[in-house]
Amino acid sequence: MEYYDFTEVLRNMDMTSILVFCVVFLLCCYALRTPDDIPPGPVVAPLLGNIPQLAGRNPLILFQKWRKQYGDVFSVYMGSQLLVVLNGYKTIKEALVTQGNVFSDRPQNFMLDKLKEGEGVIFTSGTSWKIQRKFTLNSLQDLGFGRDSFEVCIAEEAKILIELIRYNADAPLNLKDILRTCVSNVICGIVFGRRFSHDDRQFLEVVINITEDGKLLGNASILTNCFPFLQYLPGDLLGTKTILEHRKVFQKFYEDLYQSHQSTLDENNPRDFMDLYLTEMKRKSTRSSKEENTYSKAQLMALVGDLFGAGTETTATTLLWLILYFLHYPDVQKKCFDEVQTVLGLEKFPSIDDRSNLPYTEATILETLRIAAVAPLALPHSVSRDVYFQGFRIPKESNVLINLDSIFHDSNIFKDPGVFRPERFLDSSGQVMKPEAFIPFSCGRRICIGEKVAQMELFIFLTSMMQKFQFLPDDPRQLPGLEGHLGITYSPNDFKVRTVRRQDSKSH
Ligand code: HEM
Image (cartoon, rainbow, N blue to C red):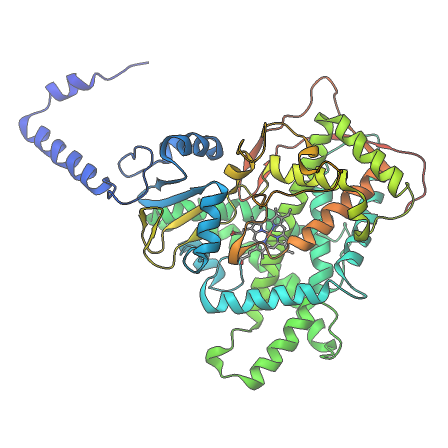
């Protein structure tokens, strides 16, 4: 390979070129200089910022290193865009809870603004976000009880999951798609009051698209925000066209359900989330002026998309990590099974009321949420105004990353953080004990809306699978790795597992 000698290049330049080179270099340095009061951080390259250091590397590992070097509040530049990274429980709590009125916005983002049009709950801020979030939280709470409660939807889907695994038992199986479809169907139960067959092509297309959009949105929105000119390139380099195509598929899927809900709506007898929303939309359109009415069909569609997007990948990924850790820690799998067998037996279908009687299993779920850090950087936050935080200035609308992973791997809170040990979540009498700092669903005003649903799903899916199957590695001499890849969630790389029936029991 041929290398260029930089001093040789300089020697061959004429005086004018050298002067131009120096001026351009100084201008670049001037443009990139970081104001003194901005949080410190690693050296920044002209135009690219810290992208060269981050490219192809796991940012969570780099953030650990930079936290040691620069402290709990440091900055990173994506191109010329400032990104402040908050680390450690004390700092994160101070921002999201104590100063939650400033730190709870989402960043302005060219790509998301274009796609979401300021609707839904995940990527919005301000009054509309507050109203839609409150409505969603209240509705989920109302729907948590009664005939068509989450538990009914989750139980129905868990039974189908068992059947699907039973059908494929003994052969090496990648559980990713089955789990994702089952978890999505729980959201369908809550939102549309019905489930879809695992052979329903339209439904499967929606589930696949949602996962792909999560990945595309992550990459595309970061790139276009840093380098806005990329949006004008021909082709579909950023995946925007694909996302818009997916949106059409989702719109079609959603439209039929919307129409059937409209035509059968009984305002005094809401069946699901969509009925609750339609009732509120009707009520608001008759009572309020247009300005204060943030309820609309487009909002409802964005909300439903958000519940699917946020609720599917996170929960399915946690279940996958659980199974992967079982392969690496068969003793933990055995202890969970022994507990389930002793407390529930192998035929009684688990109910959420059993949770307090299965502390080891519950601790295993918590340990998985900790060690795997499924949503390690939460979702991006932003500050609504210039703010001084721990002595540093964070300018209005800066991106703020909440490094939850820094809490889960903090050896001052969790001894030997790299070790998978569910017992750390049990007290001396064997009951579940959660340190205050354990916040896998984040904290403050943006705390996950679906925490309760997720906890029920994880418990019921896991215990019902434990009753029926033992999970074994496809090749015991070569276990699938415990490292994953980071998109919006942190997911394990694809792996196959052998599911062995516990006994020839009848289906639930
Ligand atoms: C194991 C499963 C889950 C984990 C670990 C998880 C974690 C999180 C985290 C860390 C956030 C970001 C909070 C922040 O920005 O500070 C979040 C937001 C959110 N989650 Fe979850 N989540 C899970 C399941 C669910 C489910 C099942 C649903 C829906 C039923 C859901 C709906 C949402 C929504 C709508 C938001 C956005 C809230 C807002 O911006 O106001 N999540 N979740």
